[in-house]
Length: 252
Image (cartoon, rainbow, N blue to C red; front, side, top):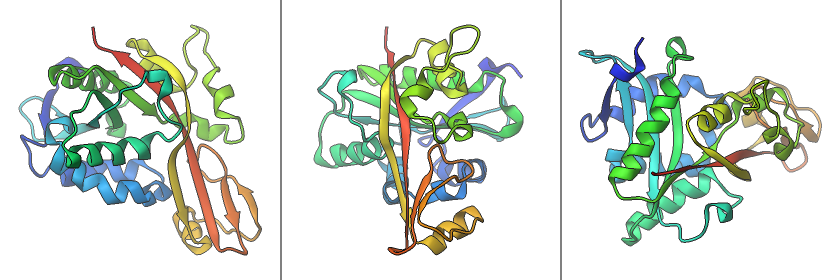
């Protein structure tokens, strides 16, 4: 497939975009990722407040959507290197709060890119990043930042995120597929944001979300999780604090 021929449609063009892309977005994530309180509180609001920033790619002359991208504009007066340790959750909540307060945004923050499995490894994710950059530039924002979820870190859940960022391939590019996709098209890795997402639930809920049995207090490896999940049997609580990686794309 020629990814450059894919058509771009936004939530302005398709008011039902959220429900249509959810059909392939939700199955792409581990179940526990669906239980982030910040996400569940603001996700529909994202489409209501910022429809021009939510888009999908579809095949030419077709209604078939094959990829989706989400981003949010927000006010940030500091340097990119000063972005907070709280990443994804912070950006989603702050963007919605800024809009409600009538504050003028200065930067665009990427939240998600999902490509249908059968269309992956065809350059579509890079195309989606570039679309976000163009959207940000068109709205007069200063840059695109992204709390990138390095999903291949799930294979190395006990490795510190700062050490993981330093892993490179034979071409001296990031070993992680998503970090590599950003760097290949000009993205700059800034640093880790160690508290990008915060997901908590009862032990029973975590057992339901993961299909695992938790009989002891401690750190547990969960498929799809970038770091271990902390299970506290006595408190009946499981806590997952996901690290991401702040990445910067400057607008030329």
